Image (tube, rainbow, N blue to C red; front, side, top):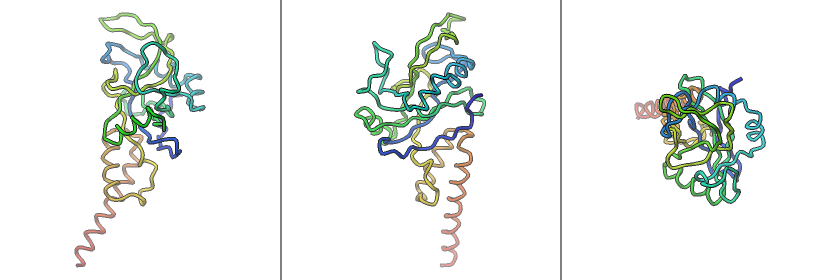
Length: 221
């Protein structure tokens, strides 16, 4: 079955600098590389692939700060992130989403600095596959697709493949400042994903509670 309701949470390990999440692939439409990936490919070769599941379980799907030019294997000195979750939200938008831990490595620290600055990190799959030409597009053959990992990139093949920070998603609302509450609510609303609806309601409820409390104090004065 498709993993569709896995709510990503920010990792708390001291080896994780921050957690990013967002869409990382769109299926059924042409991307900037003139390629088309089917939903069946994403379901069978990524979401339900036993090898992918094993890598996620063992935290061994490691990505780098850019696609390597002459290899498909992972180089530990270049590792910047770990893929922790992959799922398809039930929002009808035909997108594969992922959650990524940015690791405390030399390259990971660069990505973390960019994320702290506000850069929306691009993400792209590193994979091998065969394809055929159809209607002027490159259609990726489902049974040939082998996912290696996801890498951070400056210009992803899918325009939607940009990540956002999730540091505050697992933080209790009563531990957050009003400014943090509003920033977190706005960031999660920007995703337009049902996965975050419950969290958004909690944030907005706390914001309303605090603002009403301020108003009542003002009236008393």
